[in-house]
Amino acid sequence: MGATVLIVDGDGHRAERALGALRSDTAVAVRPLIASDPDQISERLGQDAVDVALVAFEPSAPELLEVMRERAPEVPVIAVVADPEAASEALDAGAQDFVAERDLDGEVLRRTVRYALDRRQLREELDRRTFIDELTGLYNINGLEQIAAHHLRLADRTHQPLVLVFVRIEELASISQTYGAAEGPRLLADTARILRSAVRSSDIIARVGQDAFCALLTANATGAETLVLARMVEAVATHNARGGRPYPMALSVGAAAYDPDHPAGLSQLIREADARQRERRAPIR
Image (cartoon, rainbow, N blue to C red; front, side, top):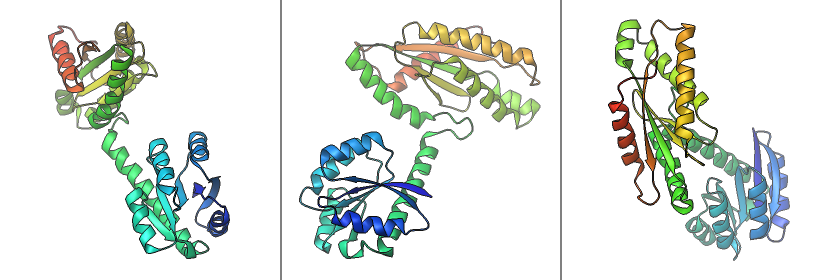
């Protein structure tokens, strides 16, 4: 396992000791980065993907931890402390774990870093399961909510419109009952593939229900709905013409625009787009 470790140390002596111990760890191949002040920390975090940070808990450490929280909140921080009282202060300041200075040379430090890396990997896996639909690999409703919140705020600041496209698969349950349970997941995967081919790289796709998807069209969304719809029509027609499934794909589509002058939440946009897809008489086939 490889890991990039950011070591923050004002005088460099603790960094040298920590590097000696970490480089002798046969379980983790360490790539070290050294920093001693907020500017260096920002530079390192801006240029490199840091897996864990080792921070000497000096008087300036709370400020340094604040910089790290702002730039890379996902990076676990291990505080290097001189005494138990400092350990409590470090945890209050935002460190996830600590190691005593006397243990910088040996197995305690190596084990603490490995534990931090394991916890981060577990947290990322839990986040993936929380925000990603495992069947299609798209965002789920939780993931869409997180990302849409950012884009809605951005639209409010820039006064650039967004468009939310709602897509429902026609007769998904009936197809599963008629052709077997395996066909439902296949149809969902086929739909996800078609949506990926229809939207732009800046757009966000999510599966938001058993048979429903959303595409959030961002970045100059004016006119993007027409383009996406045209691509979907072509992609569905091509899919059905190939005849790879014993049933045709049919998708109902509706859209709702976000107007920064009359803000609405994501759930309202979804309801409006869903209502419009229900009003459409002819699904895409």
